[in-house]
Length: 390
Ligand code: PBG
Image (cartoon, rainbow, N blue to C red; front, side, top):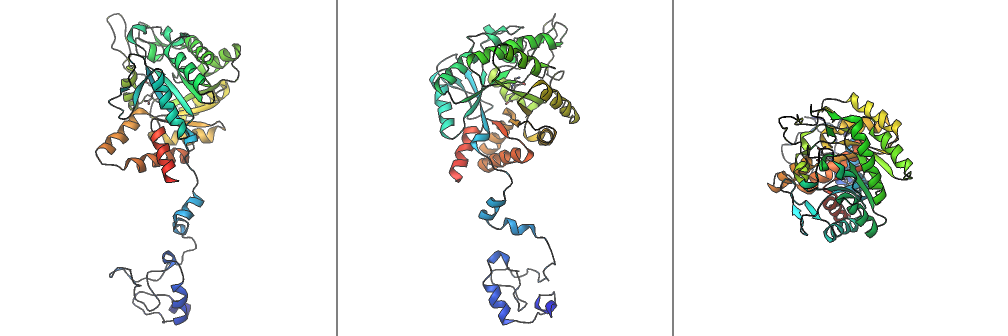
């Protein structure tokens, strides 16, 4: 009899008046497409096949049936509290300078414009920034001493931000490339070798100068070996035991950094007759093909005292985010880099993607992959969209 109550292809179930009354009280989505008289219910298109409901113990779609239900079982959420906003600073004029390959992003003029931008971010709940200075060419040298100038643009920006917003979390970038006339993250020998231990000496001075200016978190992005431990010791020696290190643990030699290097004019420079300058960063940044190597970097960073580990770039490297999440108990950050921003902006400008949906999806996927923190140029826009959804 039970079989007869169900619709069967080519067979008419028994018309049970009591059953159809019950069915009429059930929410639309829980009803099968066929009513007990073997015909489609109103609203089901003619031509829909008449079938026996499958005998399924598990129907995952039940948990997706309404926005309330979906929200209640959602595994991760995105909040402005997860964002770290990168800011580019310059002082060639008192005007912001748009970055053509990053529509909507400016090099901010040192001073009021920086304060205004960060105030806006804070009004949407973004209370963490990472500072990237554009160094004028005449201050760049092949040993990059400007990196640890106590009154350098980076150090002054940190001071300005901490004086204005004492509770703002200020992150810095520790690497020589914005100050290096050769455009590399380390000192380049005439033979074209990026010197490891010599570079670290200057990275330590740079990190200490940033801590003296008030930085909360210093972020070595250079991929030299042993820099996290050396920076930790240098900070502690100077009394900065409470300054954190966010290490770029798995930073890949990626094509996606192009727009950032436009923003800071920091790309590797052409070599000269007597000096070979490598055209790329492949002898220190990681090979995009490598996964296991990220475990090696993570173990070293953890042992050397990193507080946060970062993966960079973001969207093409979610497997590495997941790897670090499972390899270490440390917080994991992901950098949604300039090229990823540029791709989304370009598609949105052409009307090829719904920008808001695509961006919030990307942020959600970072969180699902295991990232706690997200560095993104969309920090303010995404936070506006999140606020509007509430
Ligand atoms: C500098 C640095 C880079 C980025 C962050 N820090 C550029 C590079 O390694 O060449 C890239 C950020 C981005 O593309 O958004 N070491």
